[in-house]
Picture 1 (tube, rainbow, N blue to C red):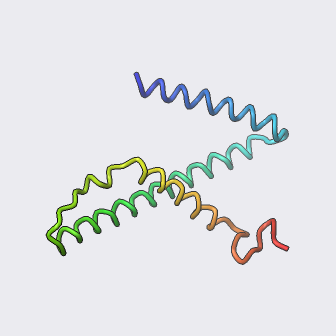
Picture 2: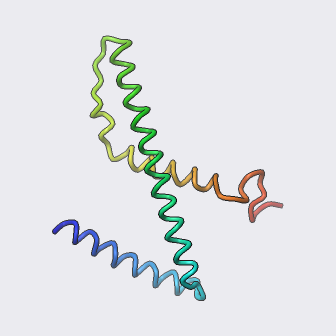
Amino acid sequence: MATAAILGLLALSSAALAILARLIRPGRGLVHFRSAVGEAMSFTGLWTVCLAVNLLLGVAIVLGVRTLTARFLSVYLLNDITLVVCSAVQAAIVQALLRPGLVGGAGPHAR
């Protein structure tokens, strides 16, 4: 039941944001929507990769500290929502850096 409520909330907020986007920028059609969905899927994949790399690196560090010192660190230290959110920010930055036109200052704001 909670999953249905969350999905309903997301559908409602997405519809409201779509209406707002149409009011702010009229003339955007289905092609722009498909592009936006593709961009979101790309971001989701990159977010997953960033989170997996961060978790693997974290586990390696925890196991390294356990092996090299007498100190015990729990892998559960990595069980924190902050890691998920920071991985999302990391993915957004990487996605922006991978966009064409941003290398060498050749973007839309280049002089």
